Image (cartoon, rainbow, N blue to C red):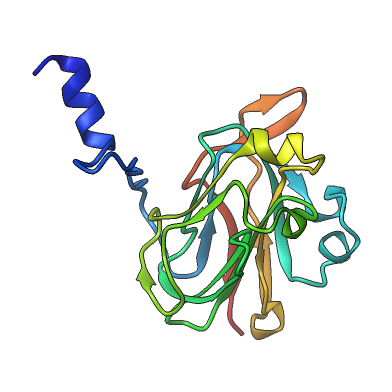
Length: 188
């Protein structure tokens, strides 16, 4: 077996299915980490009235630059998954609820281009792959591929700190990589 075959076998199972490596990073229970690599946006910059108004919660948008895999930003239990696989929610042991929504109006894609890797009530750990999504399919369908990552129950916390600004910039915009801290939720 050559080197390429060894590398390929680490990502492709015997039945030909692609497996996605887990992301590993240090975690704290009060922190939400980036579920994807990309350009960081404030929620107000997300081109969706519900998200930009903060009606889904408090957090960030990420314009993905990576592989089209959404990773768990916290450890917890899958609390909600959409039938169309474009959104997923987690609840931590401490009661933090984190919602991730892939794309704007991608519900209209009826699940095409999205593959769920976990089910409702599964216990997951930060860095575990949750959903794969085809960025090109989203663009070809005429939708924006921005990912919203929010704490959907912000009223349960005394404060939520936005700590996602990184020192790495692209066109003056901060870049984040999977596992970079985004939000710190402080209880009273």
